[in-house]
Image (tube, rainbow, N blue to C red):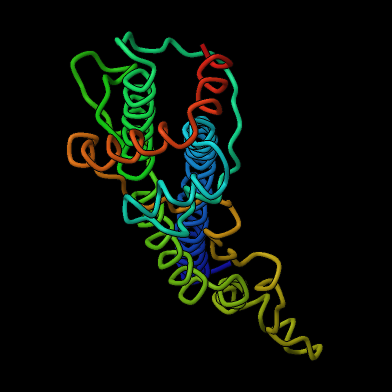
Length: 251
């Protein structure tokens, strides 16, 4: 084997290594991102369940489906996801002290609404918490808006890799630069056609399949306190016995 052959083989080996590192390096990066995304999706799904339980508990304080719809319509959220959640009670509650039952009911609804508003805000936007691994560092909790942006960026990267680093093209490239192997294959009529794309290309992430509801933003309790109070006063006067039974059950 002459010096030129050795030199050519060194170039081929180096080129193949660079092509493999580039191809598999990008794929490993996507795989890692998909694993991390899956972890955050599962965390947010748990948050969504917590939000739904909170809505269900608040709706339970409103006697009847019509009253539930009226409450959310009063807050400008007619026919929203909030009114669609079935009223149910789970867990316990410490009711606020009040001079009258009407006042106790009003305060209870305000407290439940305030708790829900904070949960929804955390679900939609996240909040800063202490990093469990790095002392003194703050990290943002997983949230819906961030995950939607993340999936959008990830899908762009997946599309780019599928277009510029197609498995079929990479395999054909490695055959072409191996001159002796390529010549042998061509001499026996074997071309450079491959069908790895369908199996090896990344599929774009379908965000909708995760079933994460997009709850409308809720105003802080201070901004809607008057509306909620007026609603509760009227509701209590019209449904006194029903509300007595509700408060008795949850206390």
